[in-house]
Image 1 (cartoon, rainbow, N blue to C red):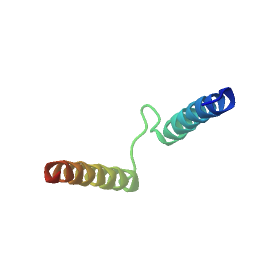
Image 2 (cartoon, rainbow, N blue to C red; image 1 turned 135 degrees about the vertical axis):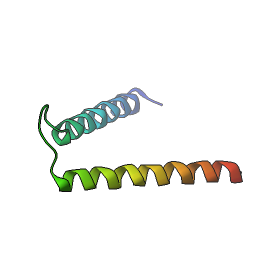
Image 3 (cartoon, rainbow, N blue to C red; image 1 turned 90 degrees about the vertical axis):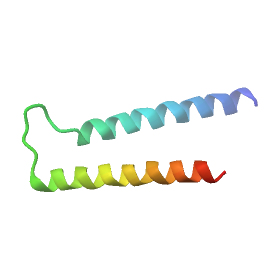
Length: 64
C-alpha cells in the first residue's frame, strides 16, 4: 500500500464518520421536545427491524 492509498483510506474513514455523526445529530430529538405519534411509530418500527436483524444474525451464526 503506497502513501496515496493510505491517505485516501484515512480521509474516507474520517469523512464517513463525520457525515454519519452529522446525520444522527440532525435527526436526534431536541431536549424537552415532545414526540409526535409519527415519530413514535417510526422509532418503534426501527427498533423492531433491529430486533429482527439481530435475531437473523444469531440464527445464521448457529448455522455455520
